[in-house]
Each structure stands twice: as C-alpha cells, then as structure tokens.
Length: 229
Image 1 (cartoon, rainbow, N blue to C red):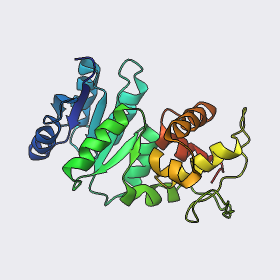
Image 2 (cartoon, one colour):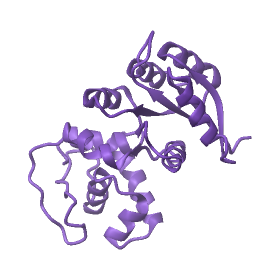
Image 3 (cartoon, rainbow, N blue to C red):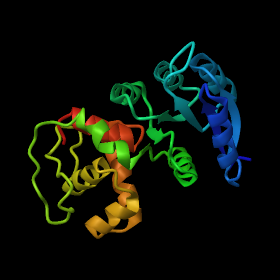
Image 4 (spheres, rainbow, N blue to C red):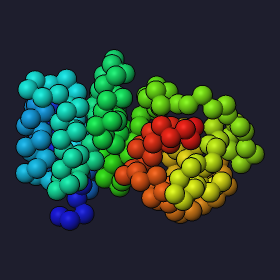
C-alpha cells in the first residue's frame, strides 16, 4: 500500500529484530519489509527494498552501522531515513553517525511507543533525537556564544545570533531553530512562541531550505557548526 511506512530492521541480534518487528507490525500504517544482520547486508537490502525508514545498529560484523549509514545515504536511489539504535555507551558513535547522515537516534531500551513514534517521525521527514541523548549529541557542536534570552522563548532555550547565510534566518526562524535544538516538538514550539503548529511547520520548512538541511536533526547540527548556537 502506498500509504504504508516501509521499515528495514538492521541488527546482528535476531531477538531484538524480532521484538521490533512484533511491535511495528501491529501498526496499521507500518510494515517491516526486511531485516539485515550486518552493515553490508543492510546496504544491499536498502538498495533492493527501498524502505522509508531503517533502524540501524552500530556494532555489527562485516561492516558497522556507521559505514552502512554513510553508503546508504550516499545512494540517491534509496532515500531512506536512518535511525541509529544504540545502547548509548559510545558518544563518538553518535557523532560519527550524524556525520554519516543519520536522521535520528533510538535507545535499545526504548519502549514500544517510542519506537513507533520514531519510525513515524522519520517517515514524515522530521528527524528525531531521543530527549536523553539530545544535549550530549549537540554539545559536540556547540559554540562558545553566550545565550541571549528573548521574551518569547522559554528561559531554558538559547537564542541564535543572526546567520551569515545566502538568505539569513528571520528572528522568528532563529527562535524556532533554537527550540529545535532543545528537542522540542512542533506542538511544544507552538506553545512556547504562542503561534499555531501550521506556522511552526512553515518556519521549519524555511529553515531547512535556508540551511540546505534534509531534516530537523541535520538542521540543528549545521546550525551549531555554523556558529548559530
């Protein structure tokens, strides 16, 4: 069915794949189309099956998940969004996975609802960072720019300075990007800025376009690297 989210599960542990499959196959809008137990097999399966979303383990035989992610993302014919599945004991894996083109992170002990939400978020092009890992991942890319509070944004957020882009971010887009960096959802951003969710979606689309980012996760990473946060 054209409205189904097609998922490829990649992990060298058969029990974990079976558990993920059991959870996802109960959802009417999600279909597990394949499994792979190594990075090399994942690359081949991604090319053959063209899934919408791939859950990718890191430590696997033959080829690790980071290299597999890099190769899959580099193939324009695939177009799958990749969620790295991690036990969160190696921060360097997370940073390398971002560089390789991962669109999200999922902890191996995540609940069923978290797994389902992650798959749907990636399929929608939103990207996803588990709240538990967001700040540790983004800290790597943070600049030394001091925060400057703004009345519209919650005190826990950072306000981004003007960007030297071909088309600069507006003040409101900078505020939205700030909240994206805090792992806020569209509804949370809407509440923080007292605007509608549809308006937030429009701002996010414009931010992605201006930064040349494929999704929210990459937009935040690029913003930190460019000195926007």
